[in-house]
Length: 495
Image (cartoon, rainbow, N blue to C red; front, side, top):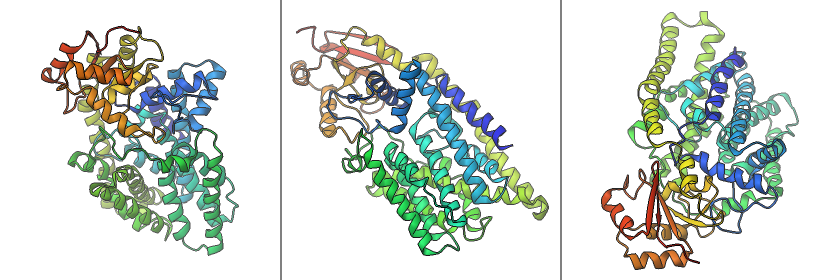
């Protein structure tokens, strides 16, 4: 039953993502990953930074994308074909992780199925953001590294349980942790928080066995430093700027409900796990994740990224309650069974109705109206040399770099770009409507840039208004539009 359900849910998401999903949204991670794969496929051994004209590499030159680029070069795949194949690989890894962890943690054949249901369908409102395992997220970003890390984390937890309980050596943890940490430092860190909590608090284990597992985790972290494209500890040290423009505010009521309802019911399952004592380590990890998430409101901006792991842990608790009923249907009263089934399927049905009636129709209308932003960027820049730098405002940077150009700056953190904060300030100046024509031209000449591109939907305070666009139009030698993107030629063609 599990593999049939996983094939339908995860296979459906991978297929949908491979066919292209909401290509009208410039703020999707898809476009930054497209740029990375493009440069890796062009030169896998000495790739240039995919975003800016810089000699530094990128944290995105990790084992996953390098491996996919190698396959693309071997089989002649395009970038989008490679991303499509990557979606099936990552969701296959996620299915394997759910199966392995579900069998070991719940000690039940129903465990994997229950966990699959709660992780992918246990949501009240549509939620699409990297790290969550909801249907909208997976249908959009099946190939993203964060999804791969979720699967690898579940596999690592299964190995930890095997090693703690059955005296296995656990050697696989060393290369697994190395791959995880070299691929996605934050995702690996979240997985290791849970794994370390399990090592420290798993019931009935002697301390030498716990110490051995901690050494294996440390060995994996150390092994990750041999990755030739970047040192993961150096990436953490050079964490870039702390800002992340355009990120959602998870403390808004909609997001809080979407993340924690019905997931919070999972606390019951963590307090009363299938196997006594096995909920304690997950409760510790949950407390740490919730604490970091709350700290986001007090300046720890990375804390926002702990919310997906908190939701995952709560959904494991939800699965515990479901497994308990599936294991022994006669052991629960009719009222308990009816209530549980009604709550689970009620939330699933409500979420699906929200998706079908509101969420996806709006996105479909936007897609029909604005089209593929990467194609629009390629059209607007087709007359420019490949090495020409473009000033792109905010998330308009992503389709521009996906189309094969470099930009002055990008809006999201990239630790390998050491002067990113300065670049972001310069970009803001370049698009300032209050600048005089002479001042703007001087700024562009200083940066050796002739062209600027923006997305009409993403301006300094929401969408661009005619009041803010007026000076840019008046000062430009020419301008043209494709979809929601507008190009302004600030400096005329000159050598």
